[in-house]
Image 1 (cartoon, helix red, strand yellow):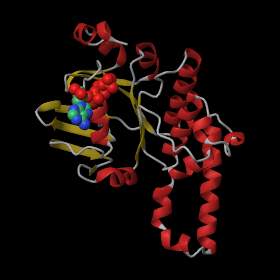
Image 2: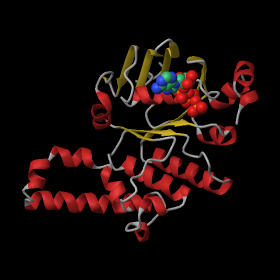
Image 3: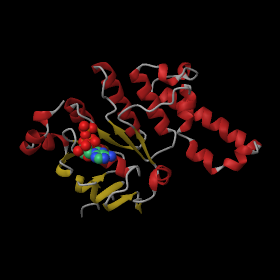
Image 4: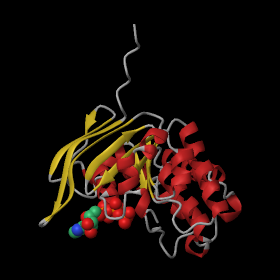
Length: 260
Ligand SMILES: Nc1ncnc2c1ncn2[C@@H]1O[C@H](COP(=O)(O)OP(=O)(O)OP(=O)(O)O)[C@@H](O)[C@H]1O
């Protein structure tokens, strides 16, 4: 007897997003397995970022269902979704100008902080302990993303682009997510930086965290992803193992011919 297939960590069903008269996503389905690196690819303007914005509560879909870890998350909004364990980075790095690297990472832990805000306000011994634990965790994550604590007191925006990307990833991990969504994390990087970030994504998976990755570099996608979903004009064009999907003539016609 075959073992039952485990339920996916994330399921998007028949997602529709309309911006005025434009249907950016038109009945999109996707399932992401636990602990997998899942690539979401497709030509420019296909709707990838819009899907990611829907999954993370930034955009409310016009229609469709979202189930994460067995729970319906559509309509929860950004904070509700983040609390359930979905964390993201953005296509354009978003770090605040005045914050140090350590402070930037700590921002990602605000979900835990806000849960005990009154205690923090009154500065109880327990809350100070919690704060120290958060700082210790932020240092651990800086090590994990390959920055090390020597970067902790530097202003985040003065770091190189590749290092800022690592800070963003550490910040996202600070919320202890079950799934990390990365919108073109390798954009603007040289080949060495790309392979370093790809290794970091593998290490994230090794921690049992699923990754949804939007990426245009097909070499990286092929070597990194366990599963691919292809979007074209807001619809799912293909879905499956990377080798099969990338060999699909429909995918090659739609995407590879136009890849950046
Ligand atoms: N807020 C918005 N208002 C109106 N139209 C939008 C909005 N956001 C995205 N779109 C449109 O929706 C479509 C899908 O865009 P989206 O950015 O999701 O594509 P993408 O696949 O991520 O593209 P890229 O690879 O270039 O980042 C495009 O036609 C885009 O112009």
